[in-house]
Image 1 (cartoon, rainbow over the protein chains, first blue to last red):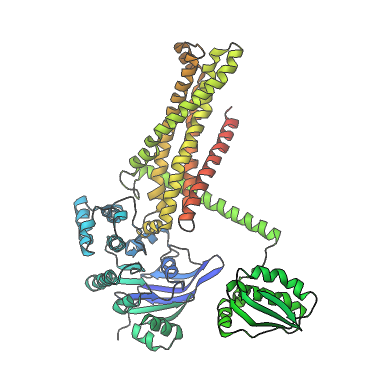
Image 2 (image 1 turned 90 degrees about the vertical axis):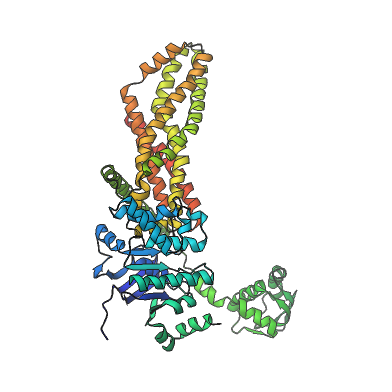
Length: 248
Length: 359
């Protein structure tokens, strides 16, 4: 089997909140065109890992290489170029509340491209149609339900056609039907656009539906990386308990 | 609840709960006195709750130095289950923190102060840098944001600035007019008002209103964006939050503040004129000519310089507290309060410095 080259290489990443170590020297690779799920119990450091690997928080140590560039040592301009090739769906959407859905999606397009207004308008409508939210185009975030906010935020994350999409707990706070629909959408993105997707979640249903590879975190350390079937056969008590408790 | 000593056994009887524990605690010393206790008998306890379990643990700690071997016996299965559930011996061990010494605390506070000062100065320098860059390139800012901010920070503040300035002009003229009248120096009210409003009250009153109104809204807006991850979302869109959020406010307030101050001065003068003309019998043309004659170009420059400096103080302090926010809604409230208090303090301090420099 041909060995894949990782798209993101994390080495010895350490994160701290004050004196408390949240991530302890973790090293892991993320491969292209796969859905990698970072999972673990609440408070194990999943979101911290995501935000540190994207430099939203300043890590205490280690390196994170995107396309072979260490983003922790890049200057702002080069770091921004890396970010333009990525998109992120935040846990609660993080849409800018003072502007409409349309304007939210237009921001990255207006700021980082020289496209005409007509093209930008067409791109916004396509992205909203893709996430099934055409009817809410001129609405403000406060007028949207939780699921609609997430889909609008996903449309914004997809605005610049990113190569890598990061999702922080996309299913959190959603009913099972909406959550499954969002998973389908994520699977479509991977299949149709060959996107690399990194998801933080602890929703077992989602993990079973979409994960190609899992990274299991426990108390700031990686307990397992690999596919889901192997994880469940690995005989690691924390992982066994995580999956067993969820199956009722 | 009863508590008595039988041989070397302390017997507890009845219900041991949050209502009876204070009674038991009161009786404890009188019951034990200097007698040694080696056993606690719980067989007569009919009911226990978390307060009772905490009391038992405190009792063990109290008795431990006085005895070599302490046994607890006889708890029924129900009572034992409650004891097991609420037993805190492990958590007590974990949560006991080492008490910091006086010098350690002072040192820690000093280090925190230095760190806050450093991050405040870094933020201020970034705001100045990107505001300078933003004069030549609108990149990283939304179209129309300057106009929107100027309207929000400036024109919407006009009514309150007008009302307060009118009242202040009115009060100054009234208070000083009465004193001047005693010396037959009514006419000097125009000079006094001109100097006071242009050099002091105009910039100061406007800055305090803007700090309360706009400084708080800047801090609250940025703090809320921080809490709801909107700032992180901007970063992920490869946008600089300072450039996107703060710079339009900085430019807008730099433009509108001198206009607001000029407006405030005119309205204060008008308020003062009402008193001077109506109460002190000064002719309108005398009031106007004396007022204009009193104001020098230097006074106007100092007044405008102050207004711009105060505007910057308000934006920088508002942005600083907004970006420093921690926690949720409570953090936003704290940031807003701190921003208003600090910016009013900052404005008054800088006003004093200006007054010393440009007498």
